[in-house]
Image (cartoon, helix red, strand yellow):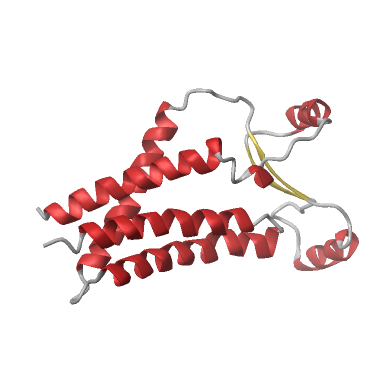
Length: 180
């Protein structure tokens, strides 16, 4: 068992977890993704009466629509309002399992990054930092930025989040993995 790998990954996961807490709650970096509407009670009532748990894209056709129906429908809805909805019938304030799953995910990401870094033949602090930033930027590009392209979501806060998070991890791993 490689001590550098496991300690590096555990501490990196803690850094990720703490940064995510700070970014989403204390700093509220992602406030642009959770906007408030004074009409929320009316909207929620309509959603409750019409939706089951799930993610929706509106307007949309049923999966059974033909190609000609899809083409005609796109012409009808182009230029009109649209929405993406993540709907759940019941909100829970039990954060325990979510926090556990989040930390396990953070640990797996950190473990994979440590494994990549430890496979470099000549690892330096700079390589650790730049590789960590590259991993974060790859994640940003293939998830957040792609969603921004297709679904017109806010992207600046996600970029800042990725750069700070993976920069902090890179500084830690650059120091830890290069110790003799």
